[in-house]
Image 1 (cartoon, rainbow, N blue to C red):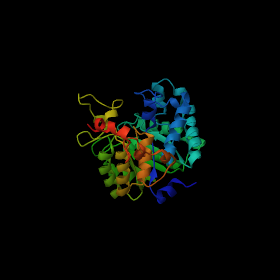
Image 2: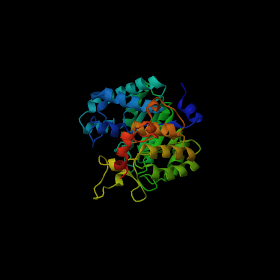
Image 3: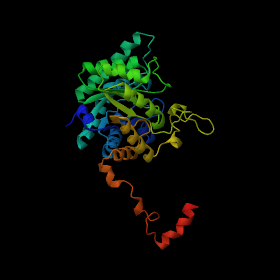
Image 4: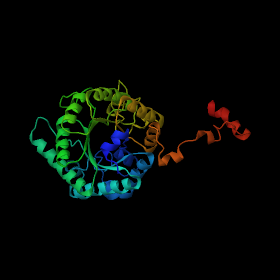
Length: 339
């Protein structure tokens, strides 16, 4: 099976994440803590979502260990399930990946424990990452994604551990701030540092939708020589509200995280994003919180692929009301449809 490096050399790798948001919508994860208890409580739900993303064209099955670290599990009283949850997540991802020749990615994320002004927190974060990734390696992963990093310092801790484990690393930053990480590095400069420290892939994920993330990716692409990843959320962010956290309803209420539905991008908008990302030179084109399999399939097809789920791609010419030869019986409805 081709490695991540080989796949990147052959063309864009298609990533699909957003497991936590989608499983919350399906009733398997509690919004707020967003801890992936579903891995142990309803493993078939995780398995099915992996399979849907695989059929839609995803090249990578990402183990659902986002927020499956000691700090978060303590919040919900499940710290004792830490090892079981991490191991099970990788096993499920690998099981499904084998069905379609996909890669398996281990996963670590922002911990909410890191404080650049408190050196003691570095060791806390290092210990959290080390135990998660030790189990991931023992269960078998092809590479590791360290994502949604608010601080370059925290990302560098993850990268150091991944590098020590001799695994390829994809490290992405969360562009919550206007133009720099929370510890003061411009996004492009932070990516340059990560690349210099050995990351195979660098880039951005989460927080911003396609419209407000792509301009930042263009600058990163000009700055680094390594592969670049772009994984926005599928929401219509804008200059006035550049992140999903800043989106507001017409009455002024915060939409994030469970009232974002009206801001959701269509499959066509995500297909356009995939095309634009490729034109900008992105090597790993994906999608984050809010993703659905229909988005992923549209992105795959925009990148020129026919995937298993393409068998059921829309054929509106077969719809009774849109076909060229609308029957007389159906034509009577057309006026009310277009009124």
